[in-house]
Length: 369
Image (tube, rainbow, N blue to C red; front, side, top):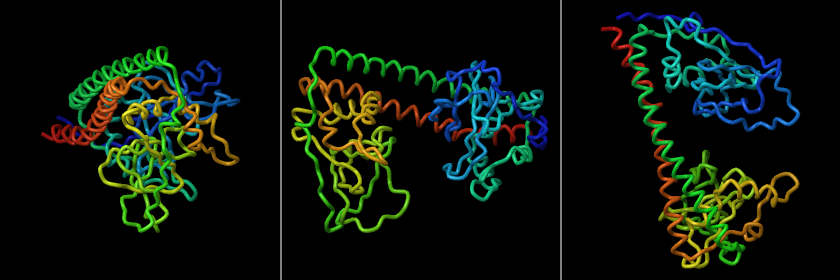
């Protein structure tokens, strides 16, 4: 079997096809995440012309050249769908021009390796913002197995993707069941404010005896990314306590703490708990506080000059149906099953990407035989 060293510049060609005739609309607009996936854009597109946006057709690539402050990753994605996307003109788009030598999906496996992230960061240049240019991309020299060997390992990769997608489809079916159950409950049960069921907690870590510092993000509780100083002003929270960031709750920065060890959080956060667990089940309440409808409503009720501020008083005015505690637990258990499976799905996707370096290495070793 053949194995050759070749620069990517000989295998790829840039794309500069623009949406000049406005053939494609906001429905086609995509951003790219550090997970190397096309995603719905978060940009405010009001009044923005889509004419300069780049067209990315099926089996084509796009990447964000800026790599600074990007989690030590390069943001790049492969359009493996049947749809045409448009992306910001600040991105670079390209395709494989030598398909007789390079399989596009094999190239994406190559991009999914930590080694490529590290290479692109090391070879990014700039003063205010470091960028990984198209020329740097073209200068990458890769060891390339013959096409049949590439396809063999790509097929292994695609089989794992298909299994993960099948699991994900079952996950979405479970979510539909949860949503239908909740909507039916809302129709059958009157809603009431949750304020009477909640108690604000502001237990300060006065003697700094608790050193388990946690922050809160839309992904849940997280460890601080940098050192913290005096902890005596921090708030203590315990199992079944709620913690949220009053200025970022609209994006999901709220969590229900299930740890057995006491923890502390910054005093900029709001901490509260349910007064009587026989009346309101924590997981049931958290289910409602994670719904997109609630997160959107926090923007409306937040009042501030510079940063939004969703106060504990505003939280108390939130209305939800509060049925019998056993019904709450049943609903929460189904939703917990969904959350657990969703986390498993994310781990599956992560494992698949972790296997990409192994597949690339295996293909090279097989080509050397």
